Image (cartoon, rainbow, N blue to C red; front, side, top):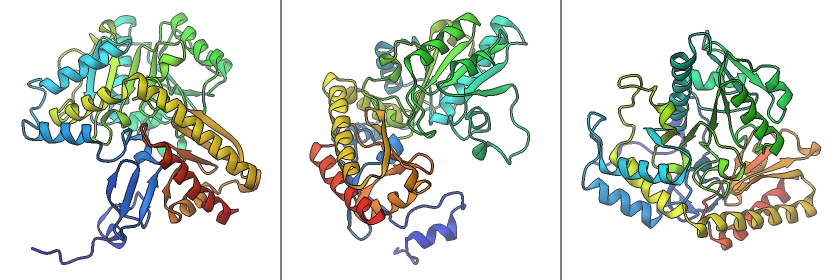
Length: 403
């Protein structure tokens, strides 16, 4: 039966809850780092579905894993385990500090599990007074009520009534602000090892190591939210590996599934034992389809070639953006690490990041923003160099038309 309505941007306003304001462009197919819309216009994808499509679109390893598992078994519930979940968990444990893995469907759910585990651990080991959670202003940890309260952006957490309690916020890269809040009543510090939504801010060596030491001093758990920084985004499989700091709990999602929804919480055996049978769960968490795809992602990205490639491609971006800036003088700073890059607008273009994003889309390149003043790039980790060059050429045309 043929559709009796047009599938276009106007239909969104008719049938969807208005919490998003999507672009007029509706992509219908993708291949590698190129995407085509309903009118068959081609775009170079520098957005990666917000750091999710870590192997681009329709990567043969992911398509193959999905098709193969799709003809075997899709869902079982956690009354039983399944082979893809066990294989994926083994690969994550073997590649990280962790001994145990819990699977969910998203970054928010993984962070929710991490926070609940930290509170339960503190209750079991130290008693009912140890409940404080320290997080950071401009942090982002998801949209559940617990995670959005821990995230340090009031615009996302206000307006929904009373918030979960005993959550406080320090300043990122300001160790004294953490020292002013931490005590033996602190059960955990949750931190991004590079702030993503908050502006592509890297931690200083002194700060991130100091946070680890403060956790040790006060018997608090260190939770690394690696939802955006993990799965090879910054170069290593997880960002902590380059920082000389090991967390107690790590969360992963976004790129972990390469576009298929999956999340994971990784921790040690000693901490994991506090999530006893029945204390937490997820209907879809660890389903065979998601885990089969994620296993294929790990097999591709957890290799020296891809990880070295991320660093080389990052340099191509930085050089290209600096060359654009030399001509047009729009950026105050190019910052970030690996393929999570922020171009910070200078004082002449404050608040105009979205204008650059819209202009870039018109020129055939998809970008992101991180706040009102930063254009964010989070492309495929295996984007061909020629696509970087072509995308930056298109981006330069957008800059020229916007300045």
